[in-house]
Image (cartoon, rainbow, N blue to C red; front, side, top):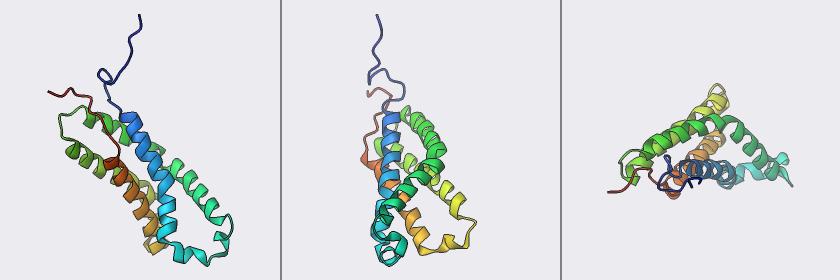
Length: 150
């Protein structure tokens, strides 16, 4: 007879689904938030007419995937570790939020940090959009603890 893996005997709780939701939310919504907060600078640009904004969003998705896949796995490992601790949800998610911010900022600093345009407000708005969606996703989605409640 096979043993069914359920929520009570899963050593990592729902950590993978949780991390995947946070990661996908950040990847999908950050470019949209960037477009919304930077619309005044984008409207006049010829490359943003027609399907330009859709192409920009798709490029952001591709680059987000490439530069965040390793940080996704780092975030997943830390999520598994914190899910095993007897912490409150707020404390666990606060540690994950700090981790998520660093995991978001490191690849962006790697990509944009060596360039003078890094200080450009458009780049900072893009970084802000990714950090905002990461932190909001961490607090929004439900992370189940793998430790039994007493």
